[in-house]
Length: 449
Image 1 (cartoon, one colour):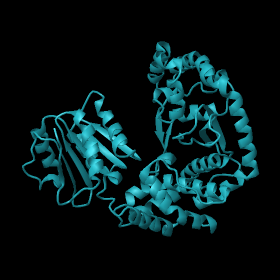
Image 2: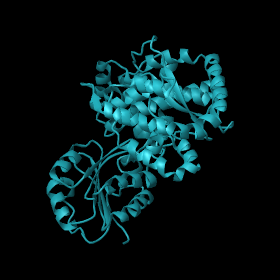
Image 3: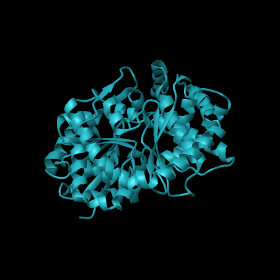
Image 4: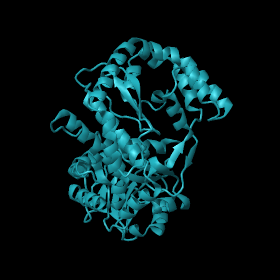
């Protein structure tokens, strides 16, 4: 149901299978998905004291309990009984009414026709994991990551049947549960070393999150005390690129040869490949992440992305987008950025160019994006009074479409978009992708109307 609710965000292959079926136009199923979307199963809570960017360590939600318990139950009825009390009784009742109504459809589309194939592949994968001693790989990885992951806590890999040829995204691990799709339709793509690499990659994320609080704070301090202008970005990307490099090393070890990096995100892939020799060196020597590792990671990022402070591909890795676009349409703007420039590590959207949202924008650590589509003259006057970086730009034509990209005195990047309608934002992103870099000598890019 989450695959249908999110239109396949974490399950694009499964979603494509659904779209090709007779149920893609089924009105009753569409109503069930809408009802499911209106049930709140996720209530967030947080652990105190963790650094800002350690989201996997500090952020929790009640939905985590549902996903974790689903890996421990054998039937929908057992799952229903195990999850009583996590959310309100009324929401719980409505949730399982929907799941019970959808179960026959899932059985028809996925379970019944593909179960035998999936079971055969799962059996072979288990045998392969035992043959290569997958369990013994995890201890040295946890040591490298300064993790306190206990050897008596099992790592549970919960597979979903995916009728397809490839998997583009894997949902993040929760607790000691790693979630992944088990492909049924491609012998070429199905490679046991790939699955072991994915499992190790996802385990690494969880192991990194399960450091002692003081270690999280120590690593964060090594970043924040650095003078590198990239310290925030590398700190944000740290867990992801470490997981990618570790998973890649394991797969190369299993294959016995070099293997191309396949991460489906350009910036992370390039950084992953660049930091890989450093990660391999520490793992081979049995060393743990230390200050020297952090400093070298920063140096590698700067060498890999020498124009990171001016290149839109890097700038849109993390951004706060503030806009006057309303009615839910504001949330479509990041989708356009994702399609035409890059899929970000992180972003936030502020609706309404107000004092409160400007304050949030100004305190944001990464790229600050403002999209203006109406009341142009008044809004530009207001922004100039609020943002010192804009003071030097006079005679901006409120009636024209343009993009102003610049930095303030502290090298914080701003991208100010002035367009006459939200629909023009598609052209903006295509123009920025083609332009590639901020030109400090020509910070304003004019757009055709």
